[in-house]
Length: 120
Image (tube, rainbow, N blue to C red; front, side, top):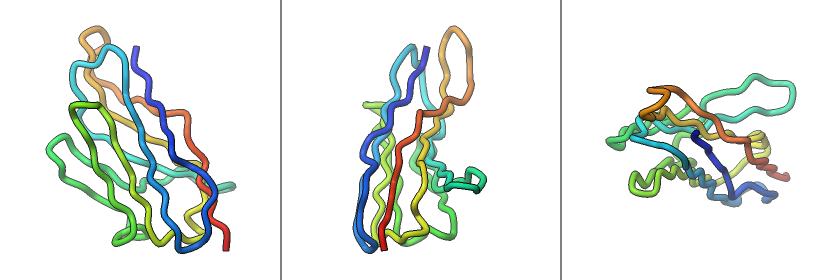
């Protein structure tokens, strides 16, 4: 029905930058909030950033001032620009979206995750 596909992860040195993308496809009528979560080894998944359809944003304290979330509603795509990366940002990053379809209705979907590794 609906798929979220992330891209843009990889290996970067501390202080570097990466840009993640997540494109939603399928039988989408509209998308409300979209966001990014991350999960480091041995830790729980945590919210990184979220953006509403109207563009309101919210960030985890640990990434404020370094990460920027944005979206292109016409492309059903959400982005995460990550600057000044730190080794503690190393994790699998997952996008999620609150999607309305005409068949199922409103529900949340998750991407498969993309690895971000920051070396010191």
